[in-house]
Length: 382
Image (cartoon, rainbow, N blue to C red; front, side, top):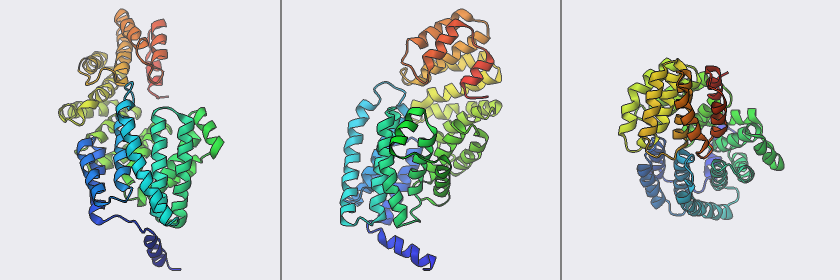
């Protein structure tokens, strides 16, 4: 059968494809979401839902937006308390609509895709809560429906991202995740990377998400931040006003040991990050990255100044970034020979909620002054 005819038949199977206006609203909403403009994204996704009252697309993206909002504040104790009930309710609406579609036509790729996407998003929410076994359960449940999607329509390219995420995470993350995945089905890291690459090349709604996922794994898990930078530069070229991409580039430059670039980049853009209402909540993260750039570059007095600002002007003092600013300030003070001040910060960190082993690192700092080698190791640099 000719490829064009196969593609036409696959599209015909999508009995619930959304209207062009809905598609436009979803793409605009995703742009707003990745700019952290949650208010505008909510408005656009809500309008898409109004146009498609029986399709899961509206509630799915509204629930995904709550996940993104939670992911930006998962380091605040109790951050999920106000978001969880809304997420459960809206995701429940998306699932109910997807199941209704599926009951009408089990061979509909669109119905299978949204079932897979919804269960996968529930798994990602549970990952933020570090509930690994339940996350793996929902991840695999979503994987099966996404797998069925591409069996029915191999060109449904957005489905490959969710499959790739499951394959990669279940073969890479901590032992407890792998154990949970082994109870269900173990993923395949290399296959996951191939699936993600396919979405990058051919996806529709999921292209930016695939790029951001690739940036994250290259920088944090594969230890190849230099390969992540070109992806971020391309994203910023396409959306120069997007300050979320700026935050990611700042962290990636540090991981790539481009400290002078991170400093120049950070100082130039700091006023913009602080000025916009939808990026202002993340200024403590931006200051943490900027302070770490100065710390790694050896400009210790300036590093202390930036960490001071991070702590004193943080929009929410409960965030883990504030804890880590205290930790990094203590280490900078150690390198400056200001041991008594450093000990004060280390003690403060031990009394805060533990974020990414912050307490253990602070206890080590109380036992012995930090060294440059130790700091670089903690930042994930060999």
